[in-house]
Each structure stands twice: as structure tokens, then as C-alpha cells.
Image 1: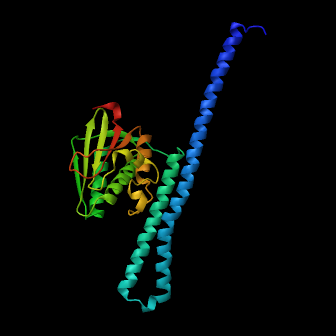
Image 2: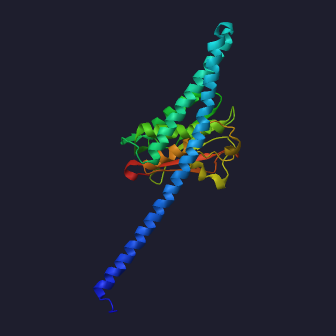
Image 3: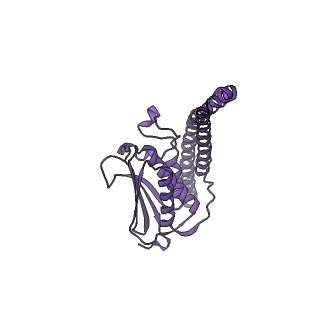
Length: 268
């Protein structure tokens, strides 16, 4: 067999490189597909459980009211109606989270970017949470007059709300949730600290995986599907930012979630 010419050898090497790169790409696609299928199976199982619980409560209390309305005292009727309202709201929230996480995983977030000062947006969220959760103490400290960043303001508020809800969920009554906001290294840095049980270091990155709820994942004491931090990270990363779990700066027990978003113009 005649030896290859330099040109043929070059073509052969290029072909080998292309085959190698395509093989790597196929292997990567296969891994992602396997992960997606696994996530989908987990998603269906957990959603089935999470939706079944409020649905069962709704049906049970509705049937009781239907059959015994005339015999039930007014206070009990009101109690049952309150439960139906609460469980209905829980189902609506869960469905909204499912739609949000689906859009994030599929890369289909429809963002309307604008340059906005984040401090008033954060202050507004804190005010709302103080009204909604009077059994918790919310502190808010900012060290900058303004923090302008290019974000979708509605999605930014949604991401912050998910982080705050996570803090509320795990913080005991009369516990503290503290927000520290500063400009650092060309970024707006928002630190949310709570008095909950905390997240061990080995679970900190897993905390952003869909359905993950640290050690509580086993006994499922805390309601919810564990999608909040996943949604928050997906949104903030769409702003070219980051969300991580870090050590607290205040107190001993608890968790700190730190959001970093590039400032408009990259000023520090």
C-alpha cells in the first residue's frame, strides 16, 4: 500500500479529530439525556406526591361540607373553608413552580431586560415579607445608595422571593432573617441569612438541584417540592450572575444564600 501524501495525511488527521469531537459531543448528549430522563422520573414521582396531598385535603373537606353543612357549627365550617383556600393556594403555587422550572430547564425564559436599581426592589420584597410573616424578624442593611444592574425586574423579584421563602420555611418562630446588600468587585451582592438548621457543606451545591431539601428530604417534614432555590439560580444565571450557599456572618446556626449580579457598567 502506497504511503499517504502530505495532503491525504492532513485530511486523515482532520477526519480523526472530527470523529473524536463528534464522539465526545454524542457522549455528552447521551449523559444529558440520561440525566434528563432520571430527573423526569423523579419529577413525576415527587409531583404526584406533592399534588396528591392538597388534592386529598380539598376533596375530603369539600365532601364533609357537602354532606354535613346543615349540622356543622359555623366555626367549623369556616375552619374547613380556610383549609380548602390554603390547599388551593398551595396547588396553584406548586403549578407555578412547575411551569417556572420547566422554562428554565428548557432555556425558554422570556426576559425583558432593563437597567434597574436593585435596592428599592429588595426593600419592597422585605416590606411584603414583614407583613406576611409577622412571626419572623426581617433585617435589611444596605451599604450603597444605589445598585443598578441589567435585569428583568419581575424575574429578579421572583428569584429573591424564592430565596426568602426558603429562609422563612426553615426559620423557627421569632427567628431572624437578615439581608445585607453591598457593591463589591463590580457586582451587586445580596446576602440572605436565616436561623434555620443550615445546610452541611457537602450538600450546599446539591441544594440547587430540583427537589433537593438537604437532610429533610428523607422525612419530608417541611412542605414543598424543593424547587425554590433551583428556580432562583436559573433566573440569576440568566442575568449572568451567581447564587451560592455560604457560611453565615452572623450567629452560629443557619444558612446564608448569596446572590451576585454584575452591576450595569461594571462599576464598583
